[in-house]
Structures are given as C-alpha cells and as structure tokens.
Amino acid sequence: MAQQAKVVKVGPGGRNNGPRPKVENPGKVFKRILGYVMNQYKAQVIIVLCCILLAVFAQLQGVMFSQTLIDGYILPLLRSGGTDFSGLAAAILRVASFYCIGIAAIFVQNRLMARITQGTLKNLRDEMFTHMQTLPIKYFDTHAHG
Image (cartoon, rainbow, N blue to C red; front, side, top):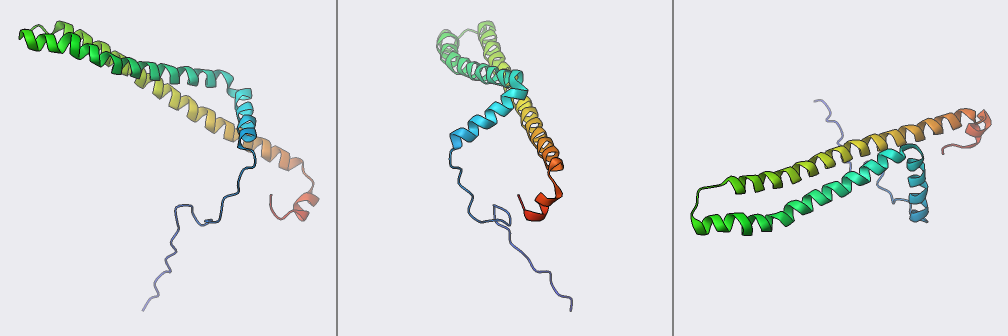
C-alpha cells in the first residue's frame, strides 16, 4: 500500500507560533513611521483625512435627518391620508445623496490608503536592498541573519 502523506497542522499564526517580540516604545515607532510616510505621501494623507471627515459627516447627516424625515414627512402623510409623495421623495433623495457622498469618500480613502501603504513598503524594501548592496561581504560572513 502507498504511504499517506503526513499532515502538518498550521495554527493561525503560521509555522512560527512563538511569542512576539514586544516593542519597547510604540509611540516612538509610530512617530518614526508617520514621519517616513508624511515625507513621501503628505498630500495623499491629507486627502485621506479629509475623506474620513467627509464620510463621518455624511453618515451623521443621514442619521440625523432620519428623525426629520419621519416627523416632518412620513407622520403627516399618515395622519392626512394624502397621496402626494413629492416632498417625501425629495427628502429620501436628499438622504440617499448623503449616503452616496459617504460611500464615495470611503472608496477614495481606501484606494489612497492602499496606494500609500504599498508605496511605503516598496520604498522601505528598495532602501533596505540598496543599503544591503553597500555592505561588505565580511558583514554577511559574520552575521548569520539580520
């Protein structure tokens, strides 16, 4: 009979399930990374922050307007029994426009953040590779890793 392949179970952390190293000063690390990102993507980061604010404002307006929508349009229509829905339709269109603006802002934010993240990683890798090319061969002979 043929031998069955040995099944190796891999946990959620991959093969390296050891303890993670603790960062001594996370604030300093965050400040350093933020400085590196802002050095290359300042305009994009500002646009991302504006998109976040715009999305929050649009969602807040949509939620806040729902009370006005119910109290000012729906309840009077129910009480009067009228069939003129033009005011209600305009109000619903207004709420829908708030949500569409919020969706567009979130989309732009996500696209820009992906571009900033991938660009920063590429630049870090390129700088690291360039630095490693300048190191002498002796360094690699004396250091097994890192």
